[in-house]
Amino acid sequence: MTENTASRRIAVGADHGGFELKEKIKAHLQGQGYQVHDCGTHAADAVDYPVFARAVAERVSRGEADQGILVDGAGIGSCMTANKVPGVRAAMCYYTSSANNAREHNDANVLTLGAGFVGPNLAMQIVDVFLTTQCTAERHLRRVSMIETGAGPADPSGGLSGGPIPGAPTPQAHACQCQENKMPGADMPESIQEQDLQRIVQRIMDLAGGADLGCTTLACGFCKTCAQTNPELVRQFLELGADRIVHQPGAGDMPRELAASIDHTLLKPDATTDQLISMCDEAKDYGFASVCVNPVNVKLVAGQLTGTDVKACSVVGFPLGATTPEIKAMEARRAIRDGAREIDMVINVGALKSGNDDLVYRDIRAVTEVCMDGRSICKVILETALLNDDEKVRACKAAKRARADFVKTSTGFGPGGATAEDVALMSQAVSGTRMGVKASGGIRDLEGAKEMIHAGATRLGVSAGVKIVKEAKGMTVSQGSTKEKY
Image 1 (tube, rainbow, N blue to C red):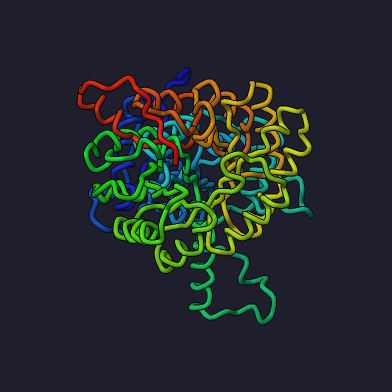
Image 2 (tube, rainbow, N blue to C red):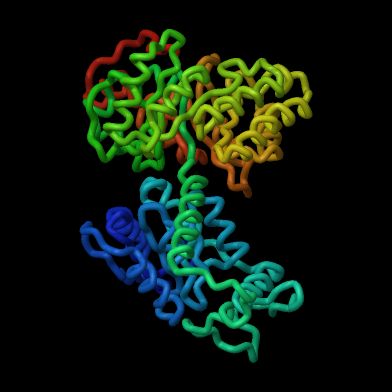
């Protein structure tokens, strides 16, 4: 870093769910020379997150810390708490792009992270971006001042600096003006307010927690006995920033702390009802993130998962993408109606290679509109091994224009999987948006996973299978093909 970090004071805090990640962030900051004040918690025992969120926020508000970092399970509650403190602008970030935006556009002074959604490696990248990005553009500073002073359309001046407007009253913790100006009849029982708050929180959780689910068959083909026979290797993948690891039924037991990062996947055409039910039972027992199946099996799987936190995921236009936009939209709508909460759709590769970008856009948009209506995540699979660089960029732009949630490298049925070059290209193409990039297919060792993260992947479709396990144990690995479909 070019600046003198020794002069920067950072307050950190976490609840029990964020304690472990907070400790790693603290060590990371101290290693870079920052002055770090730890507001707690100091152990993994259950505590109430608002206590520590307020402690960090108040240090920032009083000027005792230049910036703050908060960690809890999802990052949502701490963000809400911190933003109740005058002078604090807390931002919840899951990607480096959102951290950059929070600082550059909003001059956020408190970062909140969800330990349940962000791995340590990605968290450090987010922290570094947050602490090194500055808000300098006059238009952004003016808007930040409007946030601080409560300026609205009728008072557009808002000042031109990040601080309060000269002469404006200093906000007090108890000086909420909304009670004085509320409309008649706006009184609401406290219990109703709490219920509404819980619904809002759940809605945010639905949106934020629906991060990517990797259902790529090349990756799935490697997932045989990895997590239960070599859990330490899987932990290394998670620490790189991967928050989901693909797993197949029948692969045996695994440490429960890994379960929430795993997609249970069965895309074989000969999957039986008994296999699917058994798969759902495993997902519920272990607390997996999702169960990903072909569309015909979504209703059965969603029914089996009712009342649990495990999500149903399905595929659309899979694996060729060679159906019409209308059919893909119908397929997505039916899958969502049957209970799918995440959709992986394959683009019309032929249209893209023919230069028909409008059809590619309409093809993607048909599915994203359905997903938005159904409050589901949409991931767009490009099949990068079939495309040149120009086509990859155009496909990403179409997905961005169509408001997809992720772009994804491959299905596993194509001639190749993810490459660092592809990931870097895709990451650049969607930069400045909330979109994520998922590298999937062909990530066969720890170094390959690191390479993808460094290239800009925010999600990994990784299953550290038999080949990786043997390499990790120093065993001889056959040079024959290990590729297995479905």
